[in-house]
Image (cartoon, rainbow, N blue to C red; front, side, top):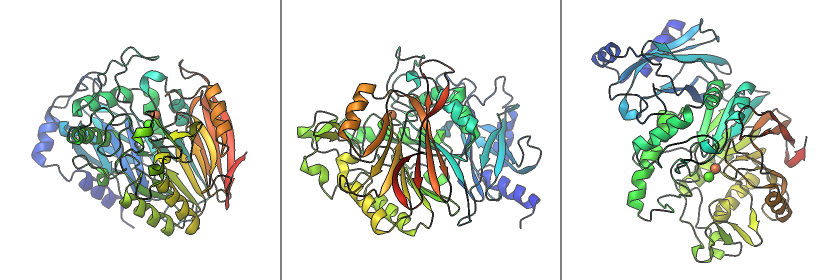
Length: 509
Ligand code: FE
Ligand code: CA
């Protein structure tokens, strides 16, 4: 067992790796700040049995371009403790927040105990950050009875209030999965229910301003401070409906990849991610697995970066393509790219976990959005890619696959099968959205009538999902905000489902 003193030294050395004494002294000397630099709150993420990432990004004036920060580095201290009052500190250290990283700080804490809660904070400029709660995962393979997580997606700022985040924070789940559309990149001036006077971002400064505008929201900050997050992205973190180097509005891939590089860099700066996820130019490794003892493995996918180009454009109405367009079934086409598909197959075959949660950006099952028409942006445009995932689950006898998704701004629960009416191989729970607007009740009626594999759908209510895993069952509760267009609206259970161990398919609970 490492001693407590050794732990302190180890953690401090790790975080301060790039810190020369001179840089530290000059940064310390000029960082007495009039305003708190913690205007964007704190976060943690990527929990492991021995630690996690602690995150903050300094901003004295979050809603101004440049966030009130100068180009000077700022000295930041951090500490993590076994109690909420931060009296039993187990690790601490210091680092520099630099302008080149948008004054973001990512600390990878190591040497903690598995399967327990911790509390942390940052100190800078004579101010203390709020205290965040986080936790380590159970040891790899350890026998675990329970995991409670929340999942969320799609939080267009101008479209509604983050009441769902306040409710999610109050639940203090073990874990939060965020499944994409953390920001929306479009100009939203004068639209929606709350002001959002921010230009459409195309470069580092623009994306930083956009994230800061979102992250200044107190409910979003509360959700980050309540539990460690594991995040992935969808399209709006970069540009609407982009895929690979293909952008809907800019046909030149070279120009678009510059924008993608800026967007990925700023995504990294604003999320509690490990160094392994730090982008290199327009590339960023975001697909990865996380374990929760022997109870769960979570595979997080990136369906945006490596996909093949959109197809069936000649017969498309823009968003939809005919279900019988043969190219969408082409086995050479992939939503994930070959490397990610092979990686996923390997993870699934090797997993010994009772529950295998697939965190991804879409509704995974086929959805006819109009008679004979399916979408071209998600799995329906890459049907062979979806088939290969289902076949891996079936052929490798993967234990209890459960898909969690976002993007569609509706709550859906359904069964995933290889053929229509065939046996369920996996179970799927999607949405809702935190604030982005979804389908009307009349549209939802048509969708459910035309897609019998969907057992539940609700498009007018904003919210998030709660997942409770035990060895016997996976219970999913859709949590709905009565009215996300006004502040402080009540949040209630919309619907509750169960998946029993060994039996794919949705049941009402
Ligand atoms: Fe969305
Ligand atoms: Ca989306």
